[in-house]
Length: 638
Image: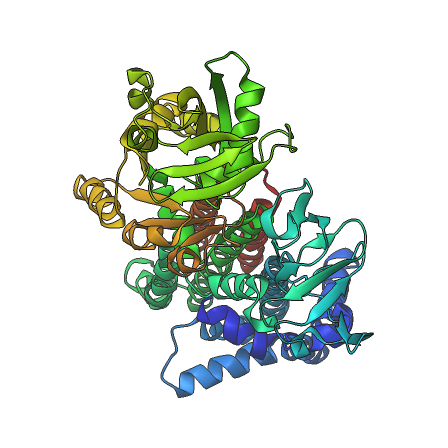
């Protein structure tokens, strides 16, 4: 964040630590007393028409001014000692002391009091935004139940080592990553993935810290230490995100350093230039106008509301299971015109399933039973898909199982020689089959029983339910969509046709994917690449915006990616783009609002129309409006 907030929250308001221990009205007691004195003096002067003696008026106003302004004056003095006089603290000090010098006591106090109130609102809003970002994911339990020597012990999760068994009761949060020891359990993963529906895990599957156990007591064998858990890494990313500034934030920080000295110069010109042209020149009148010029020029609304806008964008994304590693990536994703995606695990489920069973004898269930009896003995993903498809007949006797590398399996099932594999396997045993099977797009397993071709089973990677809709939505938004995959070109083309992609390429190695993305970049396209595997890391790094899909499992890609989508739903890619655009729009609304109002009041102030009252109301009012506008981001729906 900009220098203004770091120093001002610590030195000016002195509430960074105290507000954690005290109510806000105690932490801000000096400012509140100053406000009460100011309001009392204004009521006496304007409502009751009571004029206090000059000495008493000066004394009361001075007390109120010092109560509100001492932190600002001290900060201005410290900066001036370092040779830095072009800053908002020095600006406010000069303007308010100038008001006292020409006898405008209440106005000088009002400038400082309302400036401080505005700063307090700004700091509070920024602090709350930071807290909301952290609280979205900071859900690690303080204690965990661990089994040691047959006894249950309540310990700090940081003391648990890998390999130990922890117990998680129904309704409790999982404290550490690990493997499920219980047969089956359902978990709420909303805090990690943004998904509200329960996720069922089975024995041996990975459970992550932050998930909530929904049913019975479960046992989990710890696989990562507390500090190495996925949740801890995610929290680090979220905290680091606020430190990575967007180009807009960096521009505003630089702009403020140039803007303030220009304003000092213009204020000086407002005081001096009329001396040469105005016949009845009044030093007090033009000095007052220059003070108005200084007050309204304060860049608080810009310097605070813009970072707050980016905090809001990061918070909104986190609530939707999307982690931006910095405000700069919220900016970068708004320029994306081309979305490149991996196929397996991004647009498809990455899980093979049986899509068709064709039997020569007309009995697909019998063919499937024979296939399951033999494939259950293989660890190949396609074999697993067949073995897990439908219950079927489990009483078939399987003997003499032989795996032929690159071909398939041979075994005796219920006394019959059974072959299950690709065309090479049937060719090896001189078994004839229909020629058109060689042209099949998807993976097929052919079966032969007792030396005769018996049929085939088609196995395919299932397209995710939301993939087609999100591709259509992307194209409706004017995005060019490309799919790059290592799968067979025929399969890739079939998937691309079904989804409606602009381009698709198959049979690619990792370096081929890099080459294709480089070609898109050379064409001047702004590319976002979304992938989930370790082999996607190089192309994720190359793209202008790298997106890791299924961030709870893809370590290498998480480290490289700019954005991490914590589940594997492709619609989150479009959500990330929308969040970037929402943030950009609100940030620029604040820039235009702040600059527009300031320019108008600066002109009115120089012309003698606007007073210090209008100046401070405009300054604080614009800052508050900008803050409220930025806070809206956190409550948007995408």
